[in-house]
Length: 120
Image 1 (cartoon, rainbow, N blue to C red):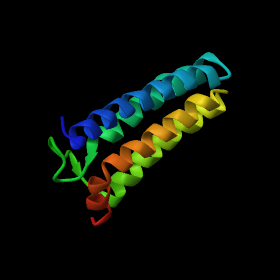
Image 2 (image 1 turned 135 degrees about the vertical axis):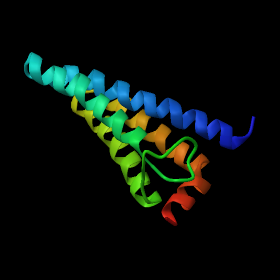
Image 3 (image 1 turned 120 degrees about the vertical axis):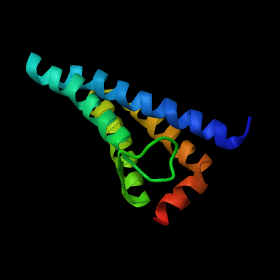
Image 4 (image 1 turned 45 degrees about the vertical axis):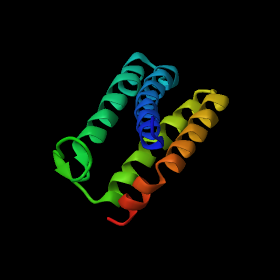
């Protein structure tokens, strides 16, 4: 197994964890049922839609909306950052820090992809 395959697998797991973290924290942070549903269901669904729709042209799979690599990286960081912030706000500091650490390890493993995205 190559390091790139490991990085892609970790990245996919982090994507799923980010959506799960948003759902988990969303249901905990909402003051009432409507807000819990909005934060716990609608926010992760919207994040998944943004993640899937906006892609760079040379990523695997079709790009529904082709965007610049820097914007794609910004979207990834925003989704991962929001997931960590929501975990922290829900009182799960250790989980939030572990998620951030795993994301940093992932981007370190995938540094060539990050450099390619930063070049546009």
